[in-house]
Amino acid sequence: MLVWETDPSLRDNEDTDAFADVWSALPKVVFSRTLDGVQGNARLAEAPLAEEVAAALDATDKDVEIGGAGLAAAAIELGLVDELRMSCRLSSKTFGDLVETRTFGSRVIYERYRRIRGDMD
Image (cartoon, rainbow, N blue to C red; front, side):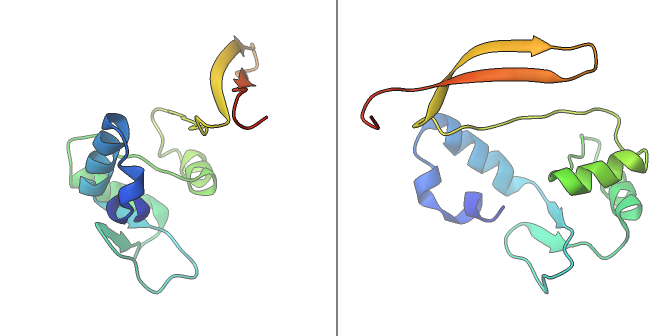
């Protein structure tokens, strides 16, 4: 998370600049069993997930997002998730061409990407 606030190499184009600006400005709550502290615009969670989500919702009129598969799964199990959004960022140096998508009745989404050929071969 902090990398978007501290690593200038991630600000290499208009899109990553915009993302880094938005990400850095967002307040974040970190759930960890091992960390003693966090940096940047973040704090360690002090309460259980449901209480932290309720506090976050009370503090804003905007959407509250949960990142991380395990944490998101726990929030879904607790009935705290109203909408699911997923994104995947692939290295543009390796994969870049989305060549096929399918949605199956079982709510499985299949995506097929083609490797970019060139300097790497």
